[in-house]
Length: 102
Image (tube, rainbow, N blue to C red; front, top):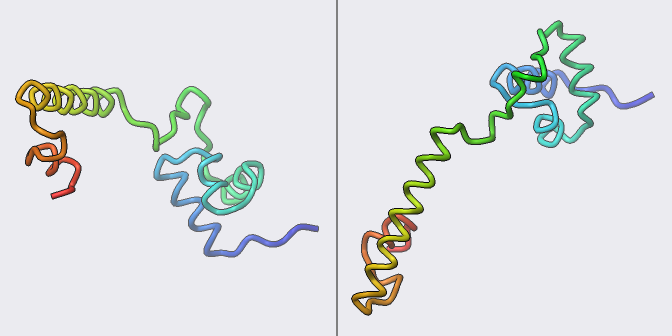
């Protein structure tokens, strides 16, 4: 017979699942198997999502991916401009502020 899950961890599992986290992620955080997470959710009568709705919450949305790509393109443009001007890459204040180095 396995170890019993604490009430605190049961509440954490339910809260993370309702928050949109996938079972695999929850299992990693709690330190148990995905099957254990599934069994806890079933015992707690939590309605399980269908596979098609199971996009992991920790994955960025398409809008977030586009925002990140735009920031990378912007930063790359700054680096190219620095190279043209002969400035060392980390001497540029905007670049430093984005990396929180200054």
